[in-house]
Amino acid sequence: MNSPVLTQLIGGLASGDVEIVDLTTRLSANTPTLQLPAPFANLVDFGLEQVSAYDEPGPFWKHHNIRTGEHVGTHLDAPVHWVTGKGGRDVSQIPMSRLVGPAAVVDVSAEVGKDPDFLLEVEHIRAWEAEHGPLENGSWLLLRTGWDQYGHDQDLFLNTDENGSHTPGVSAECARWLAEDSPVSGFGVETVGIDAGNAMSLDPPFPVHHHLLGNDRYGVTSLRNLAQLPPTGAVVVVSPLPILDGTGSPARVIAFVDRRAEEPRA
Image (cartoon, rainbow, N blue to C red):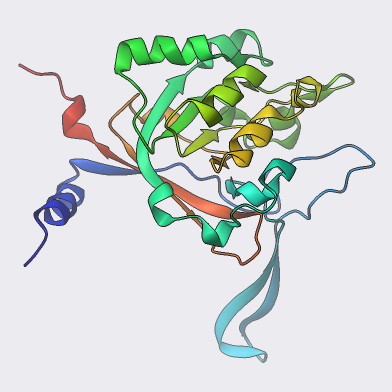
């Protein structure tokens, strides 16, 4: 017997009532990547190596080798990525049920437009909850900052000067609250990392990594198209590669949006 729930989903997709929104940055050699200052080591950027192209090494096919760091482009951070999550789950061990959940989209793009160093505070989430209802168990909080508009340019995306990188993020107290007091499975951003550009100066340094990954919560970065999602009602799907011992993985991130729910009632 067919599942009524899945039948309804397939019907919604076929009719267009349910839209699939791609939240993923395309991977190429030009995809903006994090650049750590010396003496810290950086990952390799994404690259393709052609093996054959309908020629002697492969007359009927074309294929490549890929070379990339785990944390390049739209990617998932697993707990084992951070020292506070040492001994925790690697990317292959994260339960699939934790990678699918309700999307809670918090829009701070107006604030970020005035201050690229904007930090999300607990009070901002409380105000969002007062309007849209409490965060749901197993949800993903997605921080809409408008930063995806800079994703075509490494310099604009990292926004670095002599004082460091200036990109929005989360305060130390808000990071602790998300990790210890909220029901979310994970946290997603449009920026290059789940922490703010100036997060090294916070206490603790890189508090989103410190608190979330240390409490078996997950992060996903370099998202696109959050402006196409409603504040609530969408379902997000995060699909990393199940890399054994992987601290993270490039991921395809999509959202299901029921557009009928957005139509005004008569």
